[in-house]
Amino acid sequence: MIHSFDPPGVWKPFGAFALGVIQGEGQVVSLKGQVALDEHGAMVGAGDMRAQVRRTLENIRSVLASVGGRMEDVFSLVHYVTTLTGGDSRISRSSIGSPGSPPTATTPRRDA
Image (cartoon, rainbow, N blue to C red; front, side):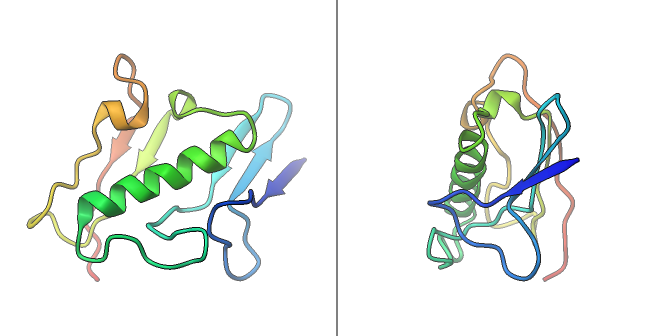
């Protein structure tokens, strides 16, 4: 059985989706794809990849915190970008909160 949730202070998803889902007794939490939106649904950091990554990580941190999780609990990230030039698309280990044991990560390029 799953329990879906939309914590306060984070953008509200559109359609029939939730920001997060808790699965089973082991507290495995799956998050909806996070983007650089503020709590009102406004874009943060248009044209500034670092600002967008920062806001996206803040959103992930907020969603996890609402169910007792931390960034150190993240075991996998997929980070989509529209370009691999003109900005730093890398996520630093310290921004995730686990410099000694970072999660796995994939950064595919998606055409806009």
